Length: 153
Image (cartoon, rainbow, N blue to C red; front, top):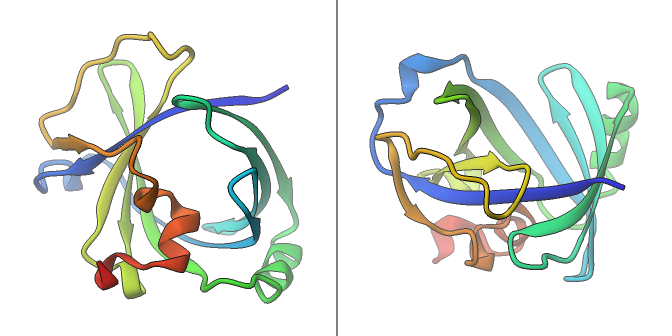
């Protein structure tokens, strides 16, 4: 069984920009009801289908499967909410992978960093471009950003 343990932070400066290459993402939600989320994503040239459970602290069940990109493009047309568009840059910092998402469209202006951990208590060092933690603020979940975009706050 897959478990995602993730923390989210706002990004407070541009010092990260030269540390990795951004990849374009498009993702939509086939279901997002607070108990489960079913997401389809295109990351670069690859397609993915992801099922996530409700959060319990900073943990939740997660199952992700690579699918043909052509299937992912088709599934995006079935999504009931607007598609989230962003550029993701993966950066290795002090032995941990940080994922920086710079959003486009109605979420333009939002830049967020995520780190996945092996346990809720796992220690990690914050990079100098990390700002306020927003892990427990549901507004920053991508499924919520598709319903209530950042620019509408």
